[in-house]
Length: 537
Image 1 (cartoon, rainbow, N blue to C red):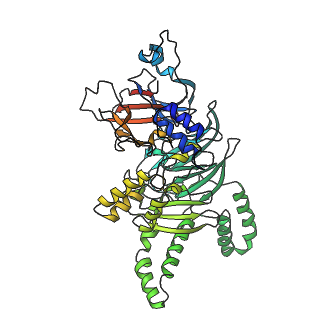
Image 2: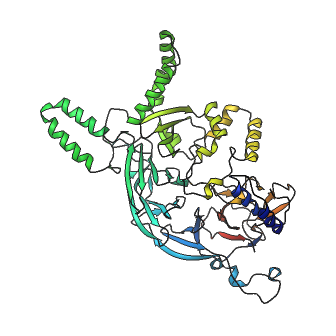
């Protein structure tokens, strides 16, 4: 659309030209080629907090105290100062404008952690339409906890995990949900997924998927629990059937007792009872695998041979699978990742075998099942990656994250890596290891738009992860003009690091739409972090 790089010419051209239908926002985002964070304040004087991220609507900056007890929330604002000279751009900023308080205003501080709990600094989910924030606190892990009450052997135990739902406007805690003697993977929100007003929490220890709804009033309401049982009345039906068979005279009395028991709600914090049955979700999975193999052959002899080879031979392997991770595909379907116990608690599960299943919560059926080396699933991932990056209907900025299914530059990079791979199956496994995607794990900032800028993804990317720090500036190059440097981001001190022995990591917090970013460089030891503010002057 734009032929000139001059912002005035672009504005005039925008007035006289109409973009193609459905492309007005993409055209408007091209103005970010002219509006970049070109100025840096190095080692800014700021509170010694652990800065987490900007919310998706850009209204709040989330941070935690160093002792992981308090939540501190800031409101981003632009620095303002007076200048007596005619050309203020050539003069340095006054000392007050260089402070952290010149860019951010503290709204409140709330103490979340109590009685031996610590705030999980890697966990935060934001509900944009109601401006609710979900935080988590937990006690220390017990790695050698005995597997009692139906728990999975080898999965750690956390005595208490608390989820706090806050109203971000004033920091009021609206509701809390506690999980006792359980284990939820809170690192980078891997064990929790938010889709619109639905929340999925995966209990690794007891193999349950808790589905909750966040009401407009700020209440966390149980919807269903998927695990031992799939339907709301499965537990009632099973208990009634077993007891009526054991003692027919007392079946009527027991039926009334189980009705009252079920009416008390879903006991998500109650350990499962000892049982010889496979869980409901595991039975659904085995049935789907069996039916798929059964339908491969029409000849009865070949069918039985196929079942022996593909199903019964691997039966125990399928039984031993546990749920690793879950994400919503829409309001009715879940993408569930299964694997071994070792892979579920490991920091790096890439080398462990894994399987993916699509589960319909309404019909309680498994509708698809893939191994993590399946070409069919990879093809879906390559063509329809946006469908895995699900965002709520109210998440405006999250709809413009660059993927290889909506950006030609990402697709070219993916195909280049695929052609360079020595083993196609290993490449497929590596790509599919990112599924299911972690919720709200990518920044919607336009400076990560691959159609606008090119940068080294080994040093910085839209994915919310720490990176190994470098003393060299990270360059953002124009896509339309490959030789034009638009701006640079340099973490750490301006003169570079004098201590080259200690390993340093950097994190980058970009505002979703303003030319504003924070770079935070820290060592693995508890030393104060070096915070730089990058902005457009």
